[in-house]
Image (cartoon, rainbow over all chains, first blue to last red):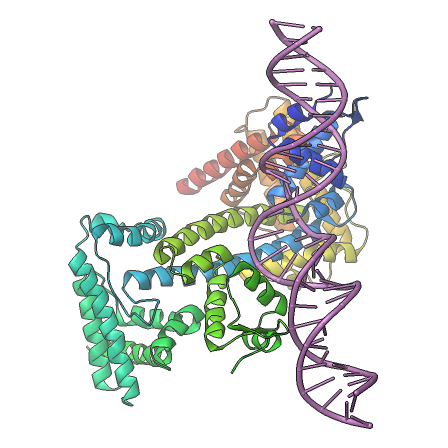
Length: 257
Length: 257
DNA sequence: CTAAAGTCTCCCCTAAGAGGAGTGTCAAGC
DNA sequence: GCTTGACACTCCTCTTAGGGGAGACTTTAG
């Protein structure tokens, strides 16, 4: 029993183009060619195609798959190499996602990505909802926390106020830095405390340690570091140092309790 | 102060080809062109290039980056979309890595990937070491466990014996299945227990529950399922059911202690 | 016998550049 | 003024794994 390209493609769940391609590469050669030039595949070719698809799932290049199936090349070595490659990609992906999450979170917090126009806010609930929608989905997926559910009606003035608070906080910190106030000065600490209280007032309760973690991330992440540094040179580093000092002082005072 | 392509590329850490490419796309247009047709970039272009690179880090397509920088398109929406895309990729990657790891582990356990020639073993220590090297690195990275350190000299006959035991185990299970012996038959349980004891004898101590987890993975993973099914239709399912029953019986007997 | 469906080969297209050929330009040293 | 080496330009092809379509031919159903 021989199969035409359409039948073969249908059985394996690939397109006819794919069969043409594999033929050209020598990866899957038809058992027979009719006198009209039609490709005809047999049972062995179908099985080989299945094997090809398994390795393709592993994102192995077709050339490596050919090596494997033709017995040239050490299977374990090729698979291990592929694992290393994918692991590297995974780590890179994780880093990118961290950046994206923080980026979205800062959009949410109203920290403008455009230092020129610090923050304008949104005019309508729809604009806010759209800005929050995907982040909300992410939060739900990652932490089971539904942003939009807990906040069914978006209070546009309140959201704009929250964003304005974040902008004001950053402006204050930038001013402290310019004025030479030390990162562990009590004034700076009080400003951080007020920011946290403001966030808590908006329903976003963070611990000082969590704030420190966020600022540390900003430092290490070029995207956010540049955003902060665009607003005021050194702000990212100052912010991180200030938040770390604040967290440490809170921790030790907690221990004294 | 204007910069040539070489200077611009050097400052930004990209190639001249990239600058050509971005020019052609209209993503980064030189401030000026000399009468000889040389591209000359100014400070603003350098800054725009930095922004481009930041977004490129996020693996945003150049077209979307252009939209963003030209103010067409909602930044939050684009970033959120990108996050969803990358999240999906991450999940897919994780699944692929699971398959790869199990595949490497089964190579290590001597389960042949080629059902035709069940297992041949390796002739030299070098062959074994090469087969184990990358997996060892992976184990160390993931679990801090050094396979090669704990086994500094590879005992080739012993490794081949271990692999032969795995092959024999699978052959026995396939026979049980063909002979209609129930997956929770005491004979099957005893065979599983012997396999675990053999593994423990080779220094690979698994609990019945761990074995059940492995077989469950084989079931859900098309690569391994096919490998087992090639040896004997239904073997993957039988193995999973048998291991699950074994683990459950061991657990309940443990509770009776 | 005709029409529809199937198949063939050939060519161009994708994203983000890399590599190279052939040609032109710039600054320095003679 | 001339040469030389570094630098720049445009244009072409190549990479992955196929997708899309044109134009020609074959097979199948009615």
